[in-house]
Amino acid sequence: MSPFFIRKENEPRLLFALKIAGVILLGIIGASALAVLFGYIVMWLWNWLLPGLFGFKAITFWQAVAIVVLARIIFGSFNHKPASHRHPFRRFKNHSRPKGFDKWELYDDFWKDEGEKAFNTYVENRKTQSRE
Image (tube, rainbow, N blue to C red; front, side):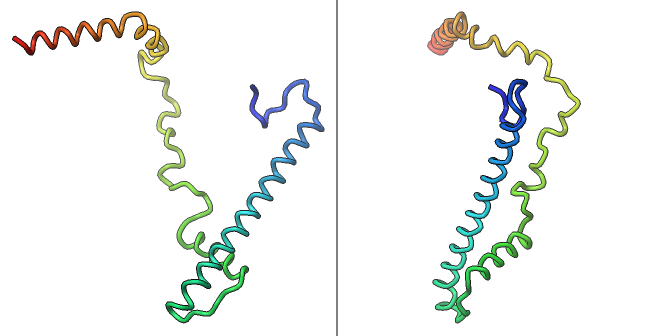
């Protein structure tokens, strides 16, 4: 299965462009839906809680959206990832796999063929050693 954003050789350009446009349109609709949802949640919570507790005025939907945007600016960027987790494998960029790593693909076959029998033998040996 090929990745979605890579055009296949036999795929018409128009169909590929329509796929990309559809994804962009769905992204815009999704982001708008989340903005509306968060705006209404903040507005509802503010109007339900703060006027009764602190005597604040009720806010409108657009004021609630502005509070959400302001909170994102003040308390965190729009990047959703902490700075320390942006590139966790950057230090391994120019390194190859550790020595012997390619042997691990044979581990499952080893365990089926010999590993379980060897492990059971080891357990029996340990039991007899502990009895002595």
